[in-house]
Image 1 (cartoon, rainbow, N blue to C red):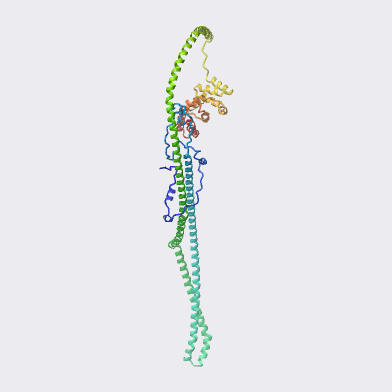
Image 2: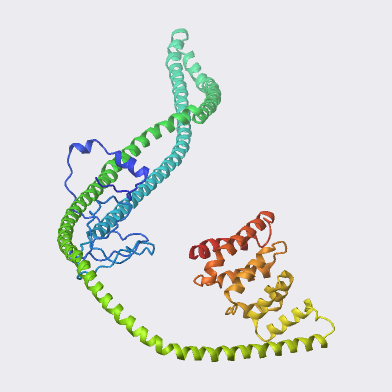
Amino acid sequence: GYNFKNIDDDDDEEELGQRRVTTQKSAPMPAPQKVVPEVKPINKEPVAPVATAEQVTIKSEPKSSIDWPKVPEVPHPPQTTFLGSNPQAVPVPVVPAPPLIVTVPQNSKHLEEKLDRLLDIVQAQSRQISDLRTQLHEQQNKNAEELNRYQASLGQVKQSINTRITELVTRYDQKVRAETQLASHNQILQIRDMVTQTLPAIMAKGISERVIPMIMTELNRSMLPMIGSKIDQIATQMKIELASKIQHTDLTMRNTIDIVCRSQSFVEAVGNSIQAGVRKGLEQVYQESLRNIILPGYERSSQELFRQLNLTFSAGTKEYVQKLDQYVAQQKTVTDRTQELAELIKKVPEQVNGTADRQNKASTTVLREDIGRDFKVLQTNLLKILRDTIRQEIEKGLEAQASSLEDSVLSAVRSQAQTPAPSMVDVQEQIRQMLTHAQINKAFHKALLSNDLSLVEFTMEKAEFRLVFNPCPLEQTVLLSLIQQISADMSNYNDLKHRYLTESIINLRWTDPITKEHAPKVMRELTQNCQNFLAANPTSSLATGLRMLLMGIQALGLKQI
């Protein structure tokens, strides 16, 4: 089988792909007509146009990430060449062979490009799933905001309930007062009517007809106002008592309603009821969005993706097998022709050996005769020339030796003591004069030959940094020696040494034979000394520069070496 090692989906995407709604499996969905758009690969080279089978050659080594079937090895005619680009390959003896051009189809590149495009489509689907997740997250945020609005509306409902209760209590108070006043007024009217109806009958029975008018007159004049005033006092007192009772009842009801509305149980009950109503709607919205939008879209895109992947892979595999069969047939033809050539070549050495032996014998005989005659002629002349040349060289050597001995004797007589070696001041003066005359390479060469680090530091201080490295006139041997002596003593490492060390490494020519031979050892010593300096001085201001220098050595110098 074939492995797709480059396809690596996220765990969340695999989990989302596995959580499909079972209800939609019963109803088969029609094949989607929309083709997933081709997405350009990320951070990859642009895809080349697909070539025909005659224009494409099969790669000898497919990508390591895909397990392709290996092409069978076919024996080739022996040739003197290096296999591949490896200079250490074993050479094969050269045998002349007729030129043969074989067109090898290369469908693996086409197939790999298709697979890359399919992988890009998978990445696009992953991004679409991420977008759907983002939309779901936004929907959750919207639902949370809606829940906050419901809570705010709950507070408004609580406030409106308190206001409504206050209004109802006020209306009830007014209604009770009106009913009480109406009842007291009706009671007074009933008492008055009863008195006016019963009193004349009573008086008519016990009092004579003459007294009745007088009594009636007195009653109307004095008794009725008194009774009316008493009744008014009673009504006023009843109104006051009723008002006080109503006010007390109003306060009690207000306090009770306030306590009930502020109680935790009432608030929780109202909140739970609102939450229950809202939760049902939100759950329905979530389920509908998941069932109708997210899962169907993902299922359609996955079906289309795997359908295209299956079709492309099947077509590519068939085409690859066809091209492989063609290649094997061509190689078989080449093998047959090679065997014929091999049989012919086996007969060639015998013929060549026989002809060569005959020619060698004839040539040897002729050469011996010619050399013998020429040697006899030249022997006399050579002996004469050698005698004259030896005599002249001996005379010249004796004359030169005599003159040198005479000069040495004269110089020994004239000088009484040996000339002292040049002092440090003289060497510094010579280096200063060399730097003045722009002889930078000679100055550094003289300082480095002294094996004195102080003299090297003097040269670095007196030389102009811009002239030393822009452009760099120093030889490769001078640069390597300068790097070695600067890194030998890191105890007084400063910014000037760091600058010289960095520029010296940059100006090394890694293709130079001397640099190739000596640079690895110098760089290893430099790396070790820099690491020791960083371990001993981790807080130094030059620690960052040294770390960058070590990274540059590892990334640039040693790779090229």
